[in-house]
Figure: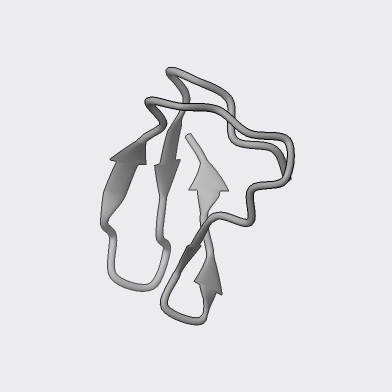
Length: 39
């Protein structure tokens, strides 16, 4: 999954939300052992 600048992501396990400020094509967005879902 690529991280796109300005997109919001959420961890479904702990409900933390993240906003990407610097995008990347090599990004693996994770919170602990869980992948993040785009909102």
